Image (cartoon, rainbow, N blue to C red; front, side, top):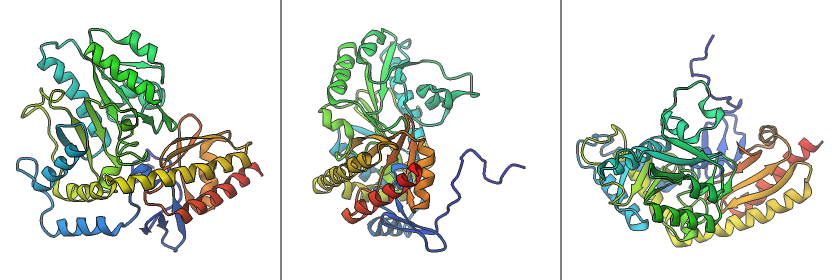
Length: 390
């Protein structure tokens, strides 16, 4: 007999009654140090007072009107994003998957608008994750994502991760765009070197190909910059954002230059809930906090501290770990043991982590995690690793 909740997740036997900062608290009072942040979502931790205040204030005014009308909260958040990024315009969604769908539509519409309707192919990369809709799984292309869901949306070509020469060879007069994560999350916390990202931008400029960056997981301060591509000193034409932008409230966005969005006129896309007043009120408060230079400097400092301690952990458990990788507070432990086993061992130490591809354990704590909590996290990871070795 099937469960009342569709069983598409192998859920842990844990549930949480409330949260406080970096801690998720079960109904019996057991406190778990949360290094998953709801998969990089709770960038300011659980029940952050500033976000609670923003949501509560908006909830007392108006919740939903639809995009048939102007939404002041949406316009304010869009202006903040435009001010802090390359973008000229923003469309709000409810999730990263929806952002991926619009990004795909936008770049194809761009070429149709430019009287080149056959230029539809989008280049993507091995290990990518862009969501779970039919378009997003076709973009990702991995067997785990697509098996049993055919026929897939056509028009995607999958290249080896990090092979820039393969990109040079793959671009043709049918290539609409290249879509890539500056740091792969689901694929195993794999950062693309800055030099490679700069070369990709050069290839796109030379061939007229649009560049889509998926910063759903690595954006919103996660790497120590507001967006990870800033390290390379380049900008995309289109960017997908979600997860951290709402600090736990469902919110996503597609940011674009005016040129890239030229074909997206009235009637070409829509969303009933996207950019609703509640989500945008919270998103604006997240931006107020996370986009601050001093806050981002602290993310970098804490990321360096955490990484240093994790390097010591790896050295202490060479039979469990191979190394550490990532940027800022988007860190991964490359494991010799199965990450799923380590996740379970972490539960026994009251710590929450997230498995990923390439035999990697993701560590995605709130960006405002305290130094003492970082030290506590490494102590608990040490005990979890010790239990596996035993």
